[in-house]
Structure formats: C-alpha cells, structure tokens
Amino acid sequence: MPTRPARPPRRLDLTALYDLHYHHYLRYAELLLRRADARHAVDDAFDTLAETWQQILSTSSPAACAWQAVRDRVRALADPARLRPTAHLDPKLQDALLLHTVLNLSAGVIADLTGVEAANVHVHLRALTSPPSPLF
Image (tube, rainbow, N blue to C red; front, side, top):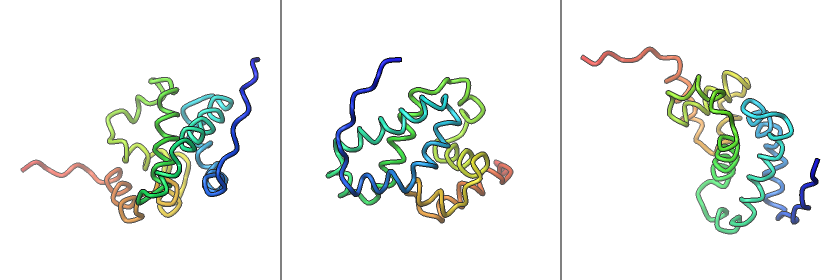
C-alpha cells in the first residue's frame, strides 16, 4: 500500500476544531465510505481548509465551512448508491436525517458540528417528520 505524504502542521485553532468534531466527522464519513477512505476524506478536507483558514476565520461560521468541506469531500468519494435513499432531500435535510436519525446526534450537537443555528436544525428535523402540507 503506498504511503501518503506527510501533512504540513496545522494552525492550533484549526487543529482544535478538528479535534473537537473529528469523531462525528469520521462517523458521518463512515456512513458513505470504507473506514480507511473515511479517515482520508476527513483529513483531506482539513488539509484543504488549512489552505484558506485565515479567510475562513473571518466568516460568520468557521464550523459551517469545515462541515461543508468534510461533507463535500465525503460525497465526492461516495458511491452514489449509498446516497440514493436520501437523494430526494435538500442537502440540509440530508444532513439532519443522517446526523440525527442514523448517527443519533442531538440537535445541539448537529448545530455545533455543522455551524447551523439550533433553531434551524429543529426546523429541518420537523420537516423530516411532518406530513406534506396539502396544496389547496
């Protein structure tokens, strides 16, 4: 098996975010990828974040940027068949479904992980369980 090149050192604040949420990022990635690929996907996403971390810090939610990077990297590598059951859902509803229903994370943890306001996470979770409203 080929070895991967050594990763450059990360800034302490980026490393802290990585350490804080790594377990959840990895569990999410493992839903859609093999375990070894999941680890690489999360690490690759953070390597990408490191390249623009200074600019990301000036955004309203670095956690949201990190989640998006992890999510994008995982989904780029995922077998489309694994995504098919949630393909009809908006990406935020997909996240809510996978993180809450499959990984059993609370709305508060999902909010911290994804950088979405907790109230919005609750709205997404309600949308998953509410019957569609009538058109007339």
